[in-house]
Image 1 (cartoon, rainbow, N blue to C red):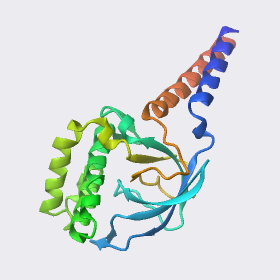
Image 2: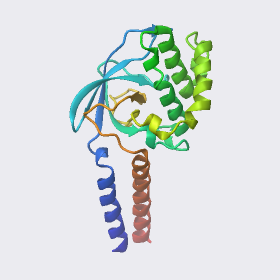
Image 3: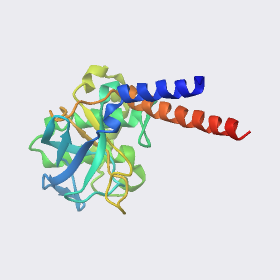
Image 4: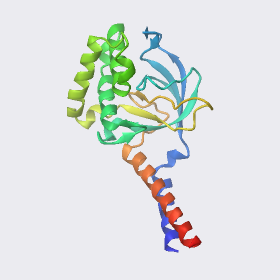
Length: 227
């Protein structure tokens, strides 16, 4: 009885803390800003975000180079506010430190408005943080992009969390992409579209841990029954 009660309480807590697991937001890639470097589109990527508040579009930057998406493709996401991410966290296979460095660079786009070369350099620096093996061989990863990488590594951790309060990360929910497609990229925007309300990273991690705990308890219960 106590085991059943514990599972029920944990399940209820999970529902209360992470209601968006069942009612995930959806991203759809609509178009791109048109600028290309090394035959790769760079910021901005224009996506539609659909959530409890309706639908809206936003300019976003993709953080992963080695994940592929196509126009009109849709997938489920969880929105996470970057200010809540710990450097030691692990989110979708990336470290919190990498995401914070990308957020630091993402915030440089505003100053690069109208400067195609600087925009390209920022995007390539962002990609290099996540996928350095491929980006470092491309001509788009020039001396300025290398310098931006170094700047992000040294300065991003020193910024107060308020620096990233308007930066929102969209974490793909694996399995929601079209059949046969790889896992979608991580995207970032500022500010969050009005259709969604970002989750604190702690709730995303807590929900994952609680799901694992429930699974372990169920296995132990099954062993006890079969003994």
